[in-house]
Amino acid sequence: MVNVSIKVNGEMRTASVPPETTLLRLLRDNFNLTGAKLGCDVGDCGACTVIVDGLPVNSCLMLANQVDGREVLTIEGLATTDKLHPLQKKFEEFGSLQCGFCGPGIIMSAKALLDENPAPTVMQIRDALGGNLCRCTGYAKMIEAIQAVANGSIEPVASKSA
Amino acid sequence: MRPFEVYAAKDSNHAVALLAQHTATSKVKVIAGGTDLLADLKFSAHSPDVIVDISRVEDLKGLKITDEGLNIGALVTHSQIMRSPIIQEMFPALVDAAHSIGAVQTRNLGTLGGNLVTGVPSMDSGPTLIALDALVNIIGSTGRRQLPLIDFFLGPRKTVLKPDELLAEIIIPRQNLGKPTHFLKFGLRKGQALALVNVAASIWIDWDKNVFVAPRIALGAVAPKVIRAPKAEAYLEGRTVTPEAMAEAGRIASTDARPITDFRASAEYRRDLVAVLTKRALEAAYALGQSKR
Image 1 (cartoon, rainbow over the protein chains, first blue to last red):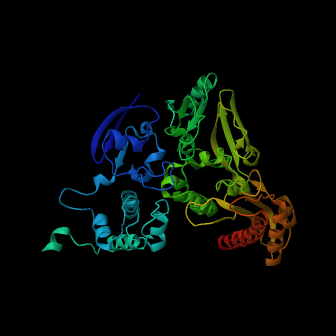
Image 2 (spheres, chains in turn purple, blue):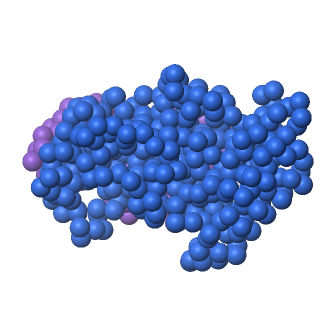
Image 3 (tube, helix red, strand yellow):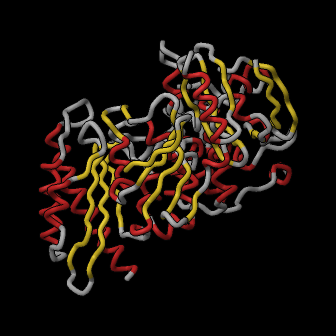
């Protein structure tokens, strides 16, 4: 067994897991954070995307031990109890998801993109989503939602209902 | 995945010591970015007993100009290559090659050394480095050796690396710093595609005579390993730069290639791609040379 201490969504978490445990399994099975999805489990589909030390990665392709001492952000770290993250809000407004399985990974990829490049071109958005497969939507409404967030056209959730 | 033990190396000496210690008695694999290894292990019945984790070995993460040339640590990721100001300035072809690998998530994890040690003939890191006469430093318990990258590959998924050795560093020799180079990949999609063919062309130009000097053409996915196109290079050496010469070099390069037919493309189609991509890579390398003049 290996002991792993990780800051997940701002909170220190520890676990003792078998050495072959991936970060994805650690998050889902040990920390009960099931937002990151197990899709292909080989780094093709991106459903497991999380942000480690600021960079989006496939959590199925990292051993838990490799993340010891590092900082992980998952989809659960974006919204608060009373407010969605702007990306989540715009995805909802634009109807960007259908079945939703790819959603957590797509949104984490989009967040990492906007953190690095607040005003991406459509090509840059498409490139950033190149590692996230969606078989429902055709991506167009996701790209529109990401553009809307980048353009700052997002309205605060509170004022919208007012 | 089947169970295995993991030993994390603190530095490259420690990594080599761990390899020496465990390869004597166990089946050992090295993990760096993990993008190839873990994907393989999940479907493999022959998983290792021991994994040596080198992902935190800081002394293999350097990227700097030295007396030898540009030294790139084996653990430099594809994303780091894309973001490196030195590489952007000197070798935009390496940025393009790194960008053509996998997707953002895999480029953030996957390392240059990891891509090379796969020995896969369609690897996108190989052609540009080979066109730049890159060398590799290998470290092991018996010492250190250096060889040209092109000799590092033996065949599909086969390299000269012994079980107790590590690829430590990739070096682009000093005389090739800033050599105009262009990389092109043809895949079936823009994202996450394997190359049907990839090509790198690297050329100096004698501007007084407008002739090619030290032309290099490297081809991927058209032979059991990444190869150079010796006949096309010989044709170009000392020849006046013209569109016709570049097109002819492409045609000759397609006869240097030894592609196979598989489910992705026929050998004939790959040969045609070699001719077209070689010509375009030469044109782009020449344009880059002109812009830097």
